[in-house]
Image 1: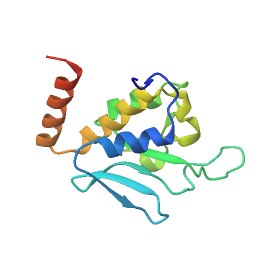
Image 2: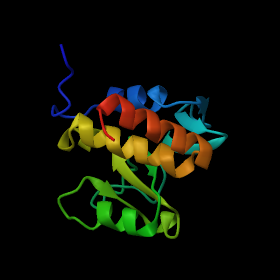
Image 3: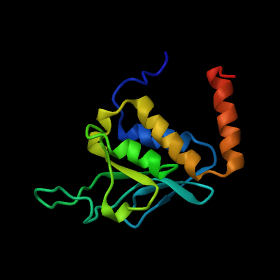
Length: 145
């Protein structure tokens, strides 16, 4: 039975897709949080609560922020400018090619959308050779030319 990629995304989907990418290693941050890397470069990480990502009313730090690298500032803006999008950024990440999302809002995205964000994050950090090889394999398995 095929997996329903249109269902709401979960944190497990982030882990599964990140681990499913080639040449991935997992390290752990200071709080034991997973950091997914390719070639020693982080592409997805689960962030410790920080003062820059906090509830605007209570000031309580968000305990569930996930950071995804993006290819460019244009890609970042495309994800964070839509007010209905769960993606956001903070001043701390100005000039940094990444977007943030709270785990509690992942269900606003489909599994397919999360897979695309994780895969794009991997592509933005993988070597050109690894990226080309993965893209070629992905085309073959999807039946693309």
